[in-house]
Amino acid sequence: MLELPENSITGIIMDNVELLPEDIDDKFSRLDILMNVGEKQINIEMQICNEKSFANRTLFYWSKLYSGNLKSGESYDKLPQTICINIINFNMFEDTTDFHSHFQVMEKKRHTLLTDKLAIHFFELGKINKKPDTSNKMQLWMQLINAETEGDLEMLEQTNVKEIQEAVLILREMSADEKMKELARRRELALYDRITDLEVSRAEGRAEGLEEGMQKGMRKGKAEGIEETKKIFKLFMQGYNAEHISQELRIPEEQVQSIIN
Image (tube, rainbow, N blue to C red; front, side):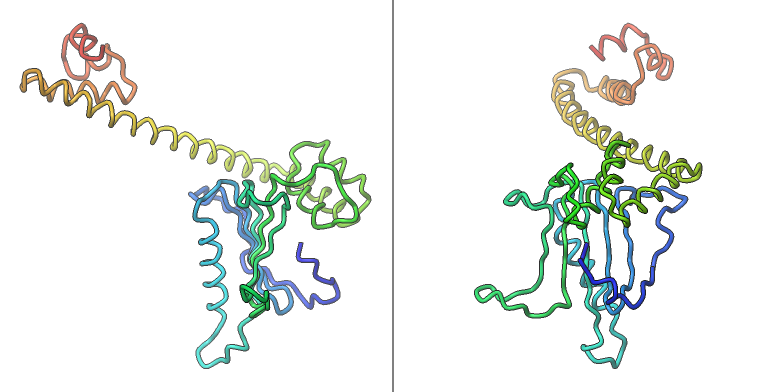
């Protein structure tokens, strides 16, 4: 993806090798890989959900990685080139059809590079061409990440690019592994749970609006019935029907239904 000559890489050290934790938390939509490749520090992040502050977040993350490498008393020259690669499943830049955007620090008019210590890449999966191009390995890797069907994988295998073929083989082996299947299933469920939580939050927002309207109406009625009506309303918004609310609050079902209506 960075088009680094293979013979220039003296070694690769993975700093976070546990990529699929047993527990599903609120970071289900992200996958981070942090590694040292020769003298370069590289962070790869895969992001599913669109975040309005994503550009600021990746810059902040870059700064933490970059500054965190300098020990007390060391020269600034010891700071490594720090590269952030963001593979995203949404479009960040509407002004271009290119799937790859590369940002560095440059002088505004002369376009003179200030330093190569900062590099931030974005790969937008939605802009990837489905048809494999054997002359563009960067695009092939993105197509592999973006593959959704067995047909997509077979098409990539037919390119006869050795590295891609090996990666497809590993993907198939992972898919056949029962533990990997279970982890994938749990992550999928976590995604559904997140979507459900968002829908519930929206519903609660609508409920607050309804409650505000109801409060205005209740103020026109008798004050002694307000608390009773509020209890009925809250239970109703939680999914209880008139019969269950009647039993819970010991209020005639006809009265409960009347208030709900």
